[in-house]
Amino acid sequence: MILLEWLMRLDDLLMQHTVIVFLFLAFMLKCLLVSFYCLIIYWMMCLVKRIWGKKMSIRANYYSWYALFLSFPLSGLGFNNVIKLPFYDMFFGSYTFVDFNPEYYDIIERFTNISGLLKVLLFLATMVWLAIVLVKCLQQTVIKIQLQRDINRQNKYDDREGLKLKAASAFGLHPEKIQVVSADFIRSPVSYGVISKTILMPHDYESRYTIPEQYLLLLHEMGHIKNHDTVKLQLIAVAQCFIWPLRFMTKYFIRDSEILCDNRVLGIYQDQQDTYGELMVRECSSQRAVKGLGFSDSFHTIKSRLEAIYSHKPEKHRIAVFAVAVAFLLAGAAVYASWHPADWLKTVGEDEPMYIEAGTFDVLIHYPDLENGEIIAQSAHEINISYETEGELVEFSSESMKETPEYRAVSNTYSYTDKQLLVDKVALYTYLLPYIEEGLDVIEVEFITLSPHYIDTIRGGMVWGGTAGCVMHNYRTYTITRDELEQADESSPYASFTYDLIREELIYRFVAHWL
Image (cartoon, rainbow, N blue to C red; front, side, top):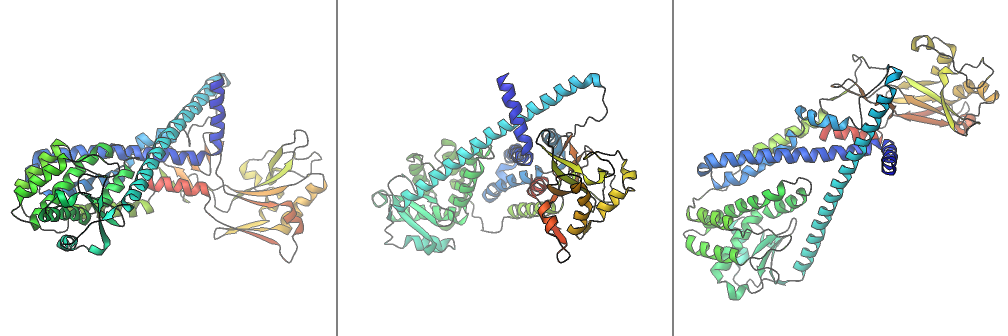
C-alpha cells in the first residue's frame, strides 16, 4: 500500500510536468525505433553482401555503412504510429468519459488508477534508460579526456626521413595539421582525433620498424585520416550510448575501414603485398586493447584483410555515389520534417470542426475564498452583478451567453489582431469596479486562449489547448494584476501581449517534427 501511495504521488507530480516527461518518452521511443531500423538495414546489408559480395568493390562495401543513416527518416514515417501512439496516450491520452452510468464509476476509477500506474512505470523505465545513457556518455567523456592527456605527455616522432610529409602528400593532406607522437601505451600505430589529428607510433618504433615499414604504417594511418575514420569512430562511440545495435556493428565497420585503407596503401605502394601483409599480421597479433582507440585484432578481421591484400585491385578515389545519395535523402527528409509535423498532428484551420476563432478568450477573475483560503478563478462572463451574493453563477448556453450584457461588456475590454492581445485596462477596471465595491477582493484577471493550436487527427481528440484525458492544460494565458488596473489612466490605458511560443508548445512542436 505504501508503494502504491508513493506511485500515485509520483503520478500527481508527473501531471505538473507532463510535457517534459513526454519529451523524455518521445526521445526514448525515437532511439528504440532508430535501433530497430538499424538492425533491419544491417541485416539487409549482410544479405546483399552475402549474395553480391564478390562483385562489390571495397569502396562500395565501405560506403554501404552510410545506409544506417536511413534509420532516422524511417523512424519518422507514419506507420510507426502503431508503436508511438499507445505510449503517447499515457501522457496526452484521448480517454474522455462524458456520459456514463454511475454504476460504472468504480470501473472507470480503477481504469484511471491503472492508467496512472502504467504512466509512472513507463516514466521510471525511461529514467532508468536515460541514467544508463548518461553514465555511458560520462564514461566516454572521461576516457577521451584521459586519453588526450596521455597523448599530450608523449614525445614527438623523430621524422628525420620526412616520412610524414611524404605520406600526407600522397593523400593530399596538410602535414602541418597532423602530429605524430611516440606513445608508450600502445603496441601498434593508430590514428586519433576529431579536430586535431594525431598518429600514435609505439615508443620503440625505431628498433621495431625499418624506414620502409614506417612509411607503410604512416600511409595506412593517413588513409584513416583521409577517410575521416577518426571522426566517425568518435561519433559512433557517442551514438552507441543511445543506439545499442551500434555496439556490435562497430567492429565490422572498423574491419571494412581497415580493408579500404589497406587497398589505398597498396594503390600508392604497389607490388608490396608480401611486405605489407607480413607487417600487418605482425602488428595485429601484437596489439592490446586501449580504451578509446579502435583496433582490428580479431582472427576474422586479419583473415579478411589478408584476402583483400592479395586480391588487390586499384580503385580511383572518386565521389561515393551511394554516400551522396544517402546524404541528399537525409537532407530531403530534414527539409520535409521541418515543414510537415507528424501525420497524427495538424494545425487547426477554419474548416476544422474544432476550430474556435483565434481572438476568443475566456476571462477569469481570481479572488480568495474566505472560507477555505483558496483562490477561486471564475469566468467574468458568468458573474451576474444583480445578485447580492458574491460570485453567484448564471447558467447560460454558449450561444445565449454571447447575448448577455456581461459577455458584451467583457468582450469590449480587449481586442486581438495580428497575434497581439490589446487590453483596455481602464474599461476592464470600470467593469470590475461594481464587483469590487460589493466586496469581491479581485487579485488579478487572466485572459486564456480558447483556440486549440493542434488536433490529434487519428484519434480525434484535441491535443493542444484542449481536453486530453479529462484534464484541461496548456492554454496560453495573459495576466493583469489588480494594481495594474487601479493605476491605469487615460494616458496609458492599454496593456499589450504579443503571441510568443511557450516552452510546452516548443517542446511539443519539436516532438511532432523530429521525434
